[in-house]
Length: 114
Length: 132
Image 1 (cartoon, rainbow over the protein chains, first blue to last red):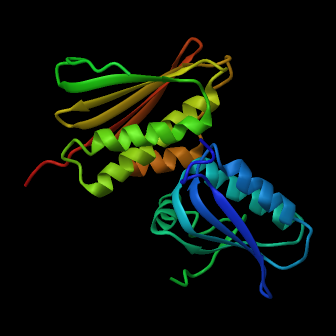
Image 2: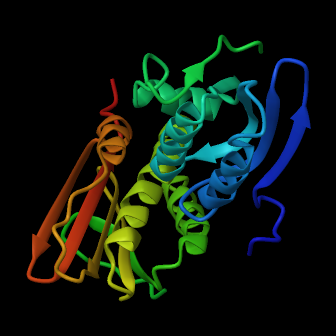
């Protein structure tokens, strides 16, 4: 099932402003650990922020949000910041419902460039 | 999956899905939930909310399971869609994730959790808004 078209796809791009992690597909209890592993690998690689591009995420649930919170705390502990940049309407809606778009110590929600 | 009728007096369609607690199968749950909701008078946004609610319900039960199957009942009623599920736990205290509670509080018309012995159950309702 993990090889199906909607499976999670993660690509990483190193830019001058940070380590950009592009995520496409569905983020849920099954796929969130893949993102957690990528974010864990980013810890300690530099001091630049890790910026998540969630514009290609078609589904996100509380399991994935919890992963973002825990990964953000780990990055904070390593002296780095986790930022949420571009995001799909679905992601924006769930961040709003959970109020994680307003304040969390774990990550920063950037103004959506879209 | 075995369709049947008259699950309750107000139920027009009801069937069960029995799943191992494998998170990969949440996609199947979401597909079934949105497919069933699309057969009702719920609009597209509400169908998406059913999909989200079903995922939260079943993911919570999968996490609580001691390895036992999760039984999920999907029902279309005159009022909308009700999805309920149950599984066996290992006796740990059950407490749904606060983020799950926030999401279900927003997307479902009503939801509830209960425990009895070593079983934990949950239910979400999605009602069709009254016309007019």
